[in-house]
Image (cartoon, rainbow, N blue to C red; front, top):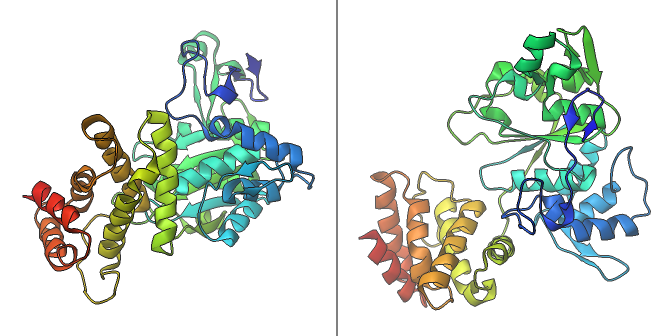
Length: 386
């Protein structure tokens, strides 16, 4: 147990590289390890090969952080797997932003890997992606600033020992990267708590007549989208404190298939599901359906389509395929079939039972029914849609 500069105690855990944490049984494996645990070997190899200048308190140089996200091969033969498939310049701008005194805002429609990129950036820069504030309509100011241990407060009055630091305060004191997910879901008055932190790099503690000043290496990554309901627009004063990087949807069908295949393969290994290559044809179908309905036109450009109310994002395609693999593993022959993904596609497309169901039926009859090699898929979709 150690004491940070804020006076708060933190628990040091062991077993990071194996995905275990204090409180788990001996040998227990985390269902979803943090990025710095899941890719510890790659981060270690990058650190060993990285001979470029590193900003203060960074674990890797900006070049190595970009390589970690985009993938590549090191001189010793170590292969760094891509964590993000997209334009290189987007990642380079994001990494460069974190090396300056401006915070980073990752903006995009749901399912464009904002959270995924945020986590991996924090893991590569600071070696810790867990300094996280999850934004919701009920997120209080204390989640961003600090709270109090009321037993200590009542017994001894306001003091550093009674103060409970937020992840942002800890990051400031330790020169690390903090993360705020879904910033636009946080009420506007709570959002503005960040203005002083980002502009002055200071967090006042008026109850004690003190403040916490950010040390070098501190920065903040926020994610946001403006598509969902319940969004609270950022004030102009707060938005100026961020450098905004927009994460686009995959540019091509093949790029999206590659992303879905990689993520499903990673998730599947942790769940002991069948290998992805066995179901690559169904992955292509899922991606094609999502892209056509999302774009409002068939892949050959001949048929105009109505788009349903859902976003039909890459993340949802990953979910549909993962669910299909689980069905194939536990109730099939282990090979992904049209019937394994049909119900998942229906659930993703038909969010509004009235309007979306009509759109889906029209798509099945005008596009899927006439497509060569899709008859089994058409029958499976018809069966679950009946």
